[in-house]
Length: 482
Image: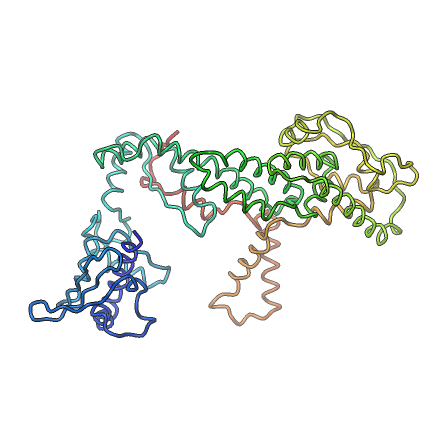
């Protein structure tokens, strides 16, 4: 398969060069010595020999793997290695010249599947024969016809998106493919595995989307998703179809998350719904999934959090008024994402015993008072943890500053990458002489505009989503697959 793909790419390169510079192509075809940069790496898979055919020396390429022989016809330079009728696809980059190149290449490469419309009419879409047949098949079944895109090695979520948009068409796709092949090329076992892979990847997609947000605190969410992923990997590691993939994934997962960064634990504890009791429950659940003891880690989190608070107290404590009482604002809403944390281990309702639980009310710190207090039980998604600390800043003037600093630490680099992408659209080929002040002004102005619209960052890659979603062949059709 690798050799075949390499041959296709080699043919594509040579056909383009044929139209642009005939003499260069001829030298490539005859495999004459050329600078290394001009030779395709595909020829590393072949041995070069010379044979006399009809009184003419021919260069023969012999595959090192299967020993297949390819002979070039140097008489007219158009029948390159006898593969023109075997080319399935040609990949080109986004250079503007490739638009014209495709019009030249299309009629030369129609021997394999053909094309439906003349390349001289670029306004019409070109479909190869099988896609056109599938379109007609879907229309006959009263189903909106569409194409399906393959996943990409360099896009982490492309496999999930590919399967997500393919699965609704599983029955019509199977019926069409099997009717074309004459036997059950696709069966229920294939779709069972595809569906299982889709379900397995869904959690990673959702976690990445949630942790890539920029308009809400993400650091308090990390332990939630770490627990979900650890449980997910544990559930699938003994699966017969996926164990070869899941076991290495779990090993890599433990390499990075065997010990969670303290900052994420601080952020989790400073969520008034969690505190120390919630952290202890999460660590107990993680210990079951990963077979790791977190007793020492829990003690380290407590000690380091108090040290960090003491630094804030030294710097900001004198400038803040004494603490005053404040209504707790507790609500009694139904538990959702927190159900497992407080519905499993440690859910008896008893408070977590700590070394400062017996401290007198007059001498305890804000952190001690906060940790000793009751947990907030507002578990709905509309709970705003930053707003909670804002409402309680008079009760915890120093601790609220610490909480806001920790909560605003982003988990992903999405926001910074978006900033670089924005600046890249401003400093481009035709605007290279902009001064630093002008660039700063343009970047800030655009960022402020997007900020008002909450459009600085979209968690989901809309361009990639649309690429997999909008592949319908009949754009006027409104029928969809359930």
